Length: 197
Image 1 (cartoon, rainbow, N blue to C red):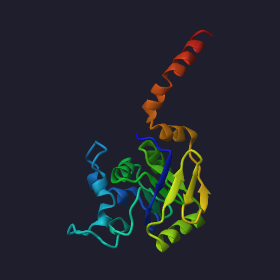
Image 2 (image 1 turned 30 degrees about the vertical axis):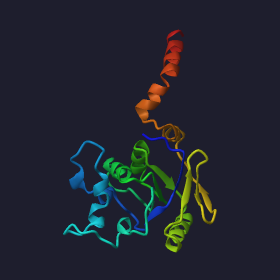
Image 3 (image 1 turned 45 degrees about the vertical axis):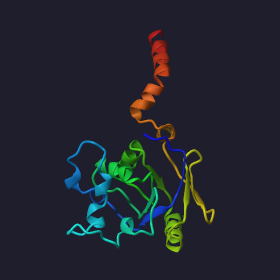
Image 4 (image 1 turned 90 degrees about the horizontal axis):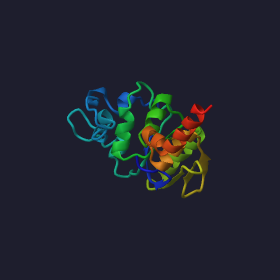
């Protein structure tokens, strides 16, 4: 995975609540086992009409919005536990998803695949949507090391929580195997100490 420290980006607003993983990546696209290529089918049934033409009313198709941050309505990632939802968001180019609530399994899958889920209060989420509504090119700063999210134009900030292990992995670009390999010497030293007792 790529290292994640600080991101300053515009954002795409998705005000819909209770977005489940089948809406993020429909089940018919789950046959592939490689993580690549899922981005083209992200929100497929919302981004495109049945005849294949773009739904210009959907935020990802609106040329006013762009960026590596998705700001979503409450309860994002509910439903099934499919990891493909995180694959699709990452492959599309999102590095951060912000919501006032995430399903636990989705949150874990996102962190395991290099997408940072940031949970904020409903009030701050409303502030973020208002900022984008006023200025679609507004930028937002995400600082993982210090665990804050800031609206760069107004300076309004919110802190966020993250599991310390997952934070270490994101900061260093580790997956679980990379983390273990990076700590191989310490693990072997501990094992020797235990064997000598």
